[in-house]
Image (cartoon, rainbow, N blue to C red; front, side, top):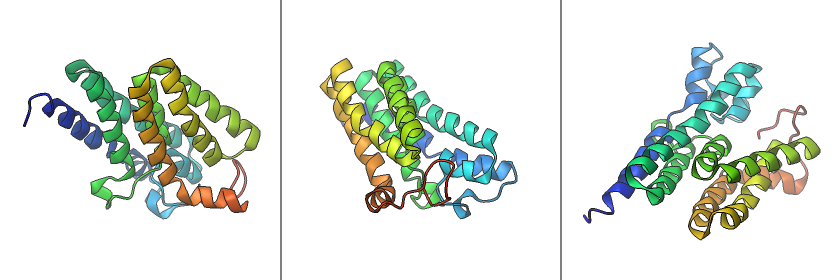
Length: 202
């Protein structure tokens, strides 16, 4: 195996292992809220944790899910460079969405994408958050906000940083869209839930 390939593989594996830690499941069980996989949409992310009614646990899930992407990215960048950092982001996203410990059924990746973007290029991460907040505030749909922010992120990544980061962010955005495929179907037929509204899966 060429020596220059090994750090990239290590970064990908490191990202996956960190990303696959199911903080939503761990925190809800620790708080006595039951198995999050049997609540709401069954998703392990912060949005579904919020359905338990425990906002502190949901907030903690959001922060930890972002950190489990940020930490391997920063470690990979420090030891192996920027290409390794981008692969660590991909690994973290894959680990969160498809954790081997939970039968490859994980979250949808919004918090992980936030952590990834803030670590890879913080201006792009801040814009992602701003777009999410704008759409969430005006349209009252968490899924639409996430999809819009993800769709525009590769453009800002290209303009602010360059094509390599843009391609990485595009890959993350495509994965996020795949994880939101059921939400997209509901958006298209007008049955998607709104923030503070009904309790359909989102």
